[in-house]
Image (cartoon, rainbow, N blue to C red; front, side, top):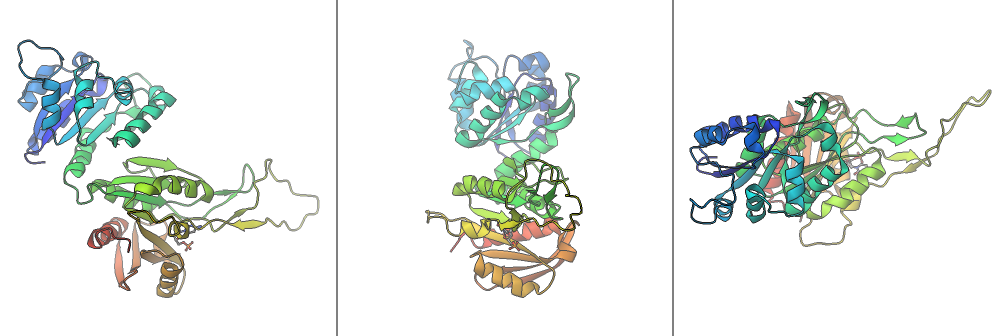
Length: 399
Ligand code: C5P
């Protein structure tokens, strides 16, 4: 953070009061902060508060005859990172269509560096398809990162998602974007189990908790990567990532991965994907027949997503493919076989006794250069960091 220039955008929501704390955190960390506010933001927090904390005039008006130069271009050019907190639904909408109707949106349009936005709004506004679409536009076409809002009591009296993330979360996300050793990298992580439906009330699944995949996604994001997390259903609250894709079945997971793999530097397949699914899901609940002693459900093979990734047409940059292998015996042999069969670059193998559910694990990491590294007992967070270090060590090379 030291000597970095942060452009802090504040738009008009009640969470604007938290931007003062965020501003203070940036200043304390040694950054320079230039505040730019919408007129509506000034209804919630005085520019004087942010001016006093940042030591710089807070910019609000597009036109100011007492000032020379072109402020929206000057501040846009000078910043290393643009943090918008809170980002209201209207601001996101204006920006998604490229409006420059006030100073803050003109600055946004003129700015060319990394952007981190912390949306804050009422639950219904947050969940509205228009807001979802605007967010998606900014994420995919402008490469914006978001610190997703938390869930809880909102100022409007509602309870639900929409409350702006805490200043410390926004600060840490900003820090990672500026300083993390995975800055500029995109990592796709799959996590959790898949659920294969038999009928509307029954399914086949497994005991994967999602902890390992979430730990990797979390650490990669904290170290500055753009993280896409494709997750099956879990009981955990997901980490702050650039894109969270919630899926249910192996087929849904495959579609989500294939749609997003193009621009990734690494694909880390931690999910416990079901090998088989019922041939067809019954539309209605299956009933037991009178005297029926047995019932056979025909299962068909699911595609192997990891293996399929190795068959993608050769593009300029192939992602490094990392697989996980959960075994009940012969760990090393199974890991070597999987590395070969699935044409993976790295396999992380662990025993079912230590791999499922808990916060600690013990693994054997093997790679395509024949290296084998037993990790000993360690936390899933440490294993996540070790794996990310290995990706850096191989310079993200797939071959
Ligand atoms: O199930 P198996 O032990 O073969 O899984 C090893 C690796 O392959 C894991 O990384 C898992 O995510 C991946 N896999 C997959 N598609 C499947 C089954 C497993 O991508 N259908």
